[in-house]
Image (cartoon, rainbow, N blue to C red; front, side, top):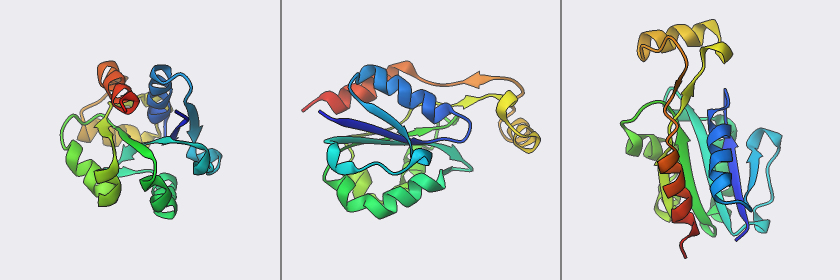
Length: 156
């Protein structure tokens, strides 16, 4: 099965997760939406993922979904989100993806996130300290959920 993992990231957590998914699906192609829009016709399966910022997916991926929704509905589809929150998963998906895509998705999961203050701006560090109480590096990337996510897409 030709699989595309298309992600949008700000500081790299969604990229990290996309690459971990690709380790479970060795023939998958991993692509950053910022590097250009891929031609979906070449793929049977498409995985879309994004980091969350203030509860929203990255704009380039949101625009891509809007332009290619009909094509995406014809694919085996997986959706993932990257964020530190371990609650509100359903709301994050419903707030960011069209209902038709959510219904068509074989699997949709929050797969964890990373906060690395070394790559964040001063404003981002202040917000993370105030909102989440994070002062140092934190990773909630869940390798078991990533493996289960990939397995769900392998099933026929």
